[in-house]
Image 1 (spheres, rainbow, N blue to C red):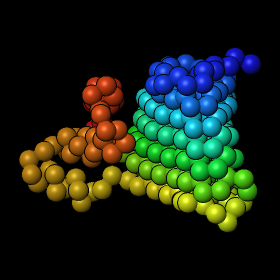
Image 2: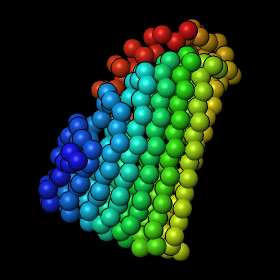
Image 3: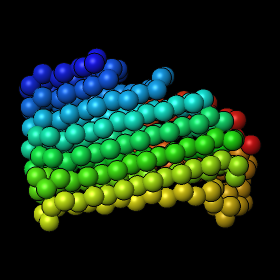
Amino acid sequence: MNTLIVPEGTQHLVVQEIGEELIVEKNASCIWVDKPTANKNIKITLKENSQLKRIIINIDPKQYREEVTYILEGKKAKLQEKRLILTNHGENYNKIFVNHIGEETESDIQIRSIQKGNSRNTIHAFLKVEQSGTNASTNLNSQTLLVEKQSYAQVLPGLEILTANVKKARHAATTSNLDEAMIFYLTSRGLTEQEAKAMIVKGMVESLFEETTEVMPQVEQWLSSIQ
């Protein structure tokens, strides 16, 4: 197995590819900026007081499949994932499993999926807090926007809590079409219909990233084909 290990005490290590397994050792932190080009089946383990921030920018995958397991093994391990999926005519499958084993662990999974054309997207996200994971905090927020009605989305969130002492455990998933009333309002203010749709999509992207300078040119290119 191709494994990347972030050594104990390493701070703010930035990686772009990890292979099949990532281990973040005690008191280490890692930022993974991921722009997927191939299918993945990966395992990530976070040790005591370690941190991982993963940013996934997946634009127009023709056919993409990812299965990822996050194991928050050590006390006070922290995980933050921000996943942006822009799909045109491809098929996208994302399976995410987060397992809280250590005490006082934290995870926050934020997903924004925007689809058009004949795209098909499935998101299966499951959060689990073991009996040993006392005072854990886990959160999933998945938002899917269908720009065109022929697009298909399926979001399957799950939550299992095996301890009575949890700080926070929640999940939310929504799938919606473009708001016609909002489009009408924006066009009445002088925007074209295409510009109105683009503004709504940009707002959704900006709700995910505090800093959009790097990702927005790619989003703009993808948006240019919206009719």
